[in-house]
Image (cartoon, rainbow over the protein chains, first blue to last red):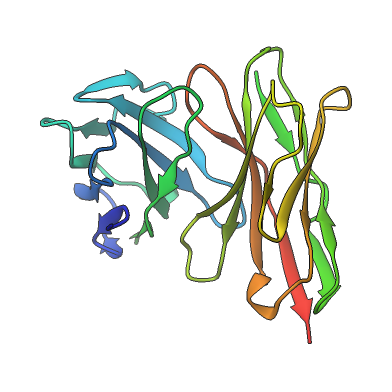
Amino acid sequence: GAGVSQTPSNKVTEKGKYVELRCDPISGHTALYWYRQSLGQGPEFLIYFQGTGAADDSGLPNDRFFAVRPEGSVSTLKIQRTERGDSAVYLCASSLGTATDTQYFGPGTRLTVL
Amino acid sequence: AQKITQTQPGMFVQEKEAVTLDCTYDTSDQSYGLFWYKQPSSGEMIFLIYQGSYDEQNATEGRYSLNFQKARKSANLVISASQLGDSAMYFCAMDRSARQLTFGSGTQLTVLP
């Protein structure tokens, strides 16, 4: 079946602008995760959804970052007033939602803030 | 807090030989999972292998095996019979009841022909 998909694959924006990044998880996966990967580093956790609710948003760096998953499937990561330091690859993953299950990642969205 | 340490920024291996990528972890949790992911230059994170903290046997998946030493808090990845397509960045990661994965800084593996 289809894997996790993310759109757009690349996004270039100007400092101060608003951006939305979309994630479409594997069908049937109830858990969805967002991570951010800066150049040369491992991914860092941002937020985790179980169904429609954010079960853990402890990784969001500040209140400019927000994510939703209104119908328990597709999720959107929203970044307000973007800063150059937000430039990174944003990775989405999904899993079955059982204990210690495997997370499957999408191809990521490369965000560049000029 | 959890921490994953990968001390090898880069590794080289000759094609068809075996290679071990090191990973140590630190956690106070009793129940946790250990994962290895491969990230080629295309950027996608590809799941390779999983080891649960209560699993007594080392996990194996094809050419991949995980050398799990709980007392030493290590979870090294062994790739047998390396192939050119194995050249990529490899990440060790851990999760716990909080579900989020904590990743190490990665090891860049280059397979030489």
